[in-house]
Structures are given as structure tokens and as C-alpha cells.
Length: 390
Image (cartoon, rainbow, N blue to C red; front, side, top):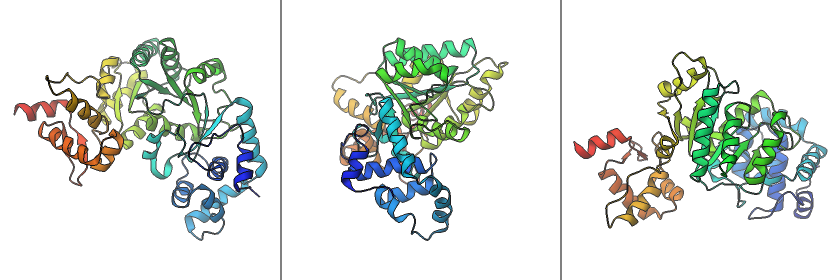
């Protein structure tokens, strides 16, 4: 049996989870779920969302639903107290922490994934950078000198500007981005497809240690878990969700980086790509992003900062206060998916009535538009200019 009482749960998580708003039973139950399910399991996510992690564990064997019965068949072989204990012990040995929703360090951006949000996360590193502006820089493992050079320049400039660089710690573009961000003295965050106690690729063991010293290494698979093809694909949604913008630096026609780009587009994250020579197969995926995903053409860090809304012109005299709030408002919007006034208020930290007033001003200025369903989204710069001058 899996102990879910407060004292047993607290003892099991000793040295792994710091109580920062989540009960020991709930945190321990989420650790159990992370052992039971594969990343992104929507059935488990829906149950946990509906009942809470601990109660979902208790009810899962009894729920008479076709989807739950099918899911239960894949969960039950993993329901072993020894497996849960081994994962927690491995986390304790490598100094990893369990982070769950409700904890201070939980990245709230993951809430956008709904039922496919991670049930729990394991982290090496003391700094979460959950609230910092973040950009995911991704690309091919089989990168060229051109791609790695551009990746390093982008990462170093963004890190120096206070932007957290997010990537997947793979060889090629990912590694170049992490190293450049560290060299610039900035923050970088890595997401792994296996446990955070297992350096993958092995050649990046030292790099991952450096990342954990100043940033964070994350995984939703428990310690001891091996990376698999599916887990790499599932991991990509976390890279996209953690970032405010995703940039594909160099990628072939069928690169896994396009999977990250697709997640970014679905989540409404700003999406860009670095163009390459039209004759280069290594950049064919980037050109697909520009053509098929309507990605922003990125040629420098200034383009990326503009995607984040950080490169807008200065305000007229006397309007600094309103413009600062408008910047927060625009940062909370997406050009691709509409968001309600309440959601914009939550993301920007403004009161709902303040957000509504500022949205009205921004609409008059042609900077935002309202969807047919009442949601708000940002307007492209060229369209905004036409509205102001037309």
C-alpha cells in the first residue's frame, strides 16, 4: 500500500520537498503519480485536477469509466511502494527537489497546458526563474557552425538582458545556448526527458552541473527514469510552456524542434525562427516555421526582445505610468490566441477593472483587437500602424 497520511508522507518526502503551501499528503501523492504515469497523461491530469492528487489515487481503482479503466491498466503495474521509494531516495542522493502546484517555485506558465500539465516536477538547482522573462532557444543536434554561432550570440545577448534561456540540454544548438548563457553570467534552464539524476547526453554531465549551480534542471519523470523517444516529445511541451517566446535557431525538415514549435503555436507563445541559406537542409525546418507557422524572422536578439514586448518606443512625456501598465498588459497577451479580460488581469498583475480600461485604450490605438468570442489578442505592428495612420 502507498501511505497517504500526513505523518508518513512528510517522512517519505524529508529532504526532498519543502512545504510551501502544499500539504505533505498532496505532494507525496503527486510524487506517486509521477512514477505511475508517462508525461502528459491527460486522463491522470483530469483526475488530479478534479479530485486532487491524493483523492484521485484513492478513487482511481473504483471509477467505472472506459477511459479510466483503460488508463488503470497501464498505471497499475507501476503501483509499487518500492518504486516510489527508490525515486525519492534517488532524488535525495542527487540533491533534487520535488516541486508541485501550490509551491512557491511552481512555474505557473504550465497551467496553460490544462489536463496535460505536469502533475509534479523534479528539479536540481535552487533557482527556479519561474517569474523571469524566458525564451526557449531550440534546434538540431546535428548543427552547423553557422547555427551554433547564431545560437550562442542570441543566448548570450538575451542572458545579459536578464532573460532566462530555456532549452533541452542536447548536443548541438541546445548545448551552445546553455553554454553561452552561462558565459554571459545569465540564467539558463534545462528540461530533460529522463530523471534529473541521469545526465543525458552523458557528455553534458558537466554542463548540467553548471546549469544546476546557477539555474535549474527540470524533469517531470522521476529520478532514475531513462529518456525515451516519447519522453523527448512530451518534454518539448514543457520547454514551450515555460517560455514567453520560442525561437528555432537551426532545424532540418523533420527536426524534433518543430514539435516544440507546434506546442508553442498551440499555447499562443510568440514563435520565431532564424533563417539560413536556402540551399541548406539544416535550415529547412526554420523556413517551415516562417512559412507554415507564421513565425517571426529572427536575425538578432533585438528581434527576440521585440517578440517579448521589450523593444517598444518610449512614451510621450507625462504618460510613463500608463505606458508601463500598458506594457504589462501587452506582455500578458498573445498574437495568436484570444484571452479574456480576467485572464489578462491575472497574467499582468492588474486589477480586472484596470485591465479592462487599458484594453480599451489599446484597442483605440490599434495595438489590440477583440476576437469574435470576446477574447483579446495583440495586433501585428504593420496592422497597428495602418490603423493609426489610415
